[in-house]
Every structure is written in structure tokens, then in C-alpha cells.
Image (cartoon, rainbow, N blue to C red; front, top):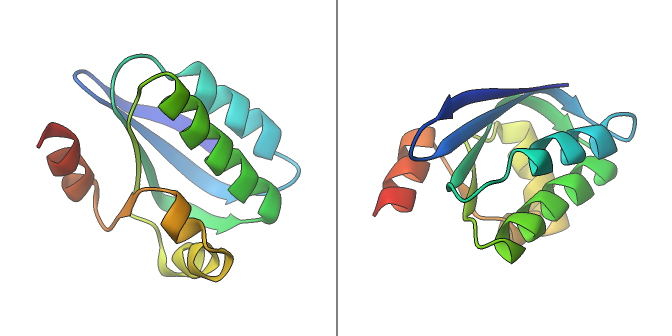
Length: 110
């Protein structure tokens, strides 16, 4: 799994690429948390092809840390297979998720 900052101006877009699983979840969580500043964040999931239970915990910890720092985080462009995991586990209700990055930008700027 790789973490890439795709944009860092008035908001941040962070892309996750690969599988978020037990072997990398803690490192990915720490890497993304280190990127949290005062700017709203979009986490692009369009290239994240799998999320394990450890990965779900990492995503939740990212959202909770951002919230504690007063930063809005939206998960966007989630592929169908990962969205199904979010739905089955109830994470779709715990994390702010939208269909597209454009939707996330509109919401954060709205």
C-alpha cells in the first residue's frame, strides 16, 4: 500500500493505493495521521482494492484523530468491493463517505 499526497493547497487529497491490511495498517495510519494539519482532507480510496479489519481500525483512527484536531475528513471514490466491506461492518455510518472526489471537494468548500 502506498500513500500519496495528490494535492495540498486549501485542502489535502491523500490517495491510498493497494491493500490496507494487518501487515501495513499501523504504518499507513501513522503516515496519514502525520499529514493531518488544519486543512480539510479527502482520502481517495479509488485505488484501495481491499481493507481488512485492521485497515478499518486504521481508517477509523485517522478520522478520530482528525476530528480531535478540528479537521474534517471525507473518504471518497470508494470502489464497490471496499464499499461493501464498509456497509457490512457498519463503517459506512461511522466515516463520512462520498461517491467522488468532486463531491468531497464541494462538501468541504460548501
